[in-house]
Length: 320
Image (cartoon, rainbow, N blue to C red; front, side, top):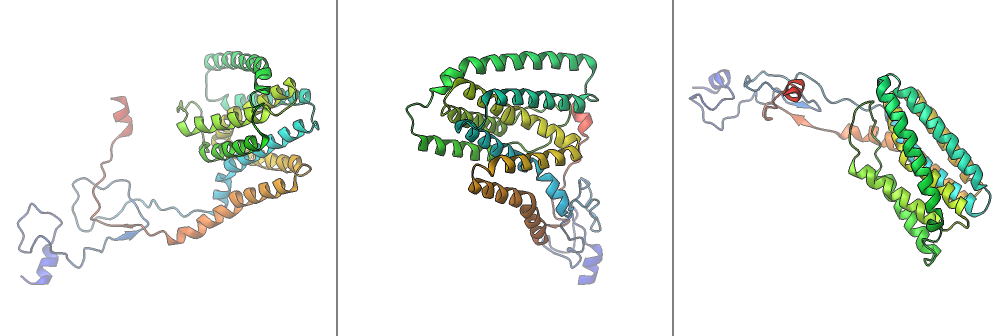
């Protein structure tokens, strides 16, 4: 047979007896090659040479969409610098610790009301009443526990030099920023906390404890630890809920925290202000632009030689 006859008769099957060898490659083999495209599933028994991809999975990034997606990282960095500014003001006696306790209480009530507004359409009345009772009980227990442990925490690092404390605190905050969970949290998703998220929170609380131990009185230690619990344990949960439910509110929170961090940091240290400004600009505006620029080099080649992917009915498999 001629090559033209082989081209007309060629099929991608091995169970038929063909006049051409098994390793024969026709000229039309690369006709279905595609770049940066991906289908949801190949038909399991489809071996036709003209089979095409059905769904384009390559979606080019847009700059402003990536800027919005970077807001959780910007918020987390801003919360770290706000906490450090509060600590410096307490250490230099520029902030009354009693005022910090009242501010923390007001922030907690504001955050809880925001959570309730976002969750009002996602849970029934009985579940919401139960959640309120659990929240009130946990808040009272945390408040009393921190108040009773403040004298102990004040003397926790009395025998440790300040240089070691600053280095340990900086390392823990860097670990907190790297391991934090920046994904959105849907209402009633019941998704368990990731291990990295738990480690991130523990790192931030540990750093807050060692910093609070350098303060002079118990009420300052109590106010700083209470503020750290809200900033690194409660606010990330609210941030993920806002990220999933209210994008305009997410932009408002990002702008507010960024401005607050600059206002609190600049009178204390110009170097820290420049450092935060650089981190904010890079994460929010420069990194999305770099990702948009780099996607032009994305070159994912697909073709009929890829293995078939079974398309399973997810709902049916879950019900079974």
